[in-house]
Amino acid sequence: MNLKCVMVVDDKLPIGMIANTVSILGCALGKRHPEINGEDLQNLDEQPFPGLIKIPVPVLAANGDQLRGLKESIAKDELEVISFTDAAQHAPTYEDYRQSLVNKTDQQLKFLGLCIFGKTKRVNHYTGNLPTLK
Image (cartoon, rainbow, N blue to C red; front, side):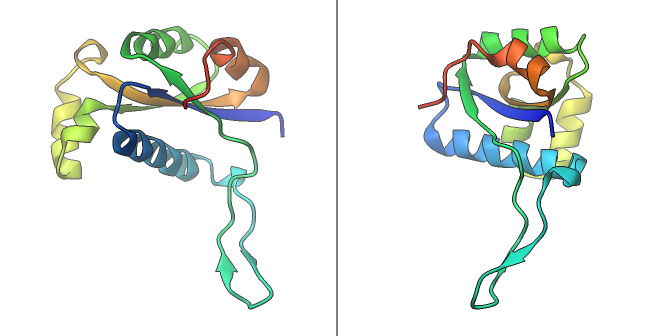
């Protein structure tokens, strides 16, 4: 598999919001690409372990401006980008999120994190200069 996924998160967010952002982006990726997950396993005690993603997922740091610029520059490429924004973060229900999102442009949204997925070389082209989130 010559595929790569990276999560790029606003490093100014509190740790809880960073964890929430990455987990939501990972769920969205898993829904779109179930083929990247391994088969379910079980241990010697016959306890189930659902299949995990078969490719590494580094979490990288960026600021809000970098996230917006990254999303805009990738839009012209063959990569898949899943965005997590303030519209999602502030919505108490999915319907509230939907209503907020359909009434805003990209310029009106604050990007909190991006999941970037595609061919390794292309993903590296856009994210190779970003530091690991620490």
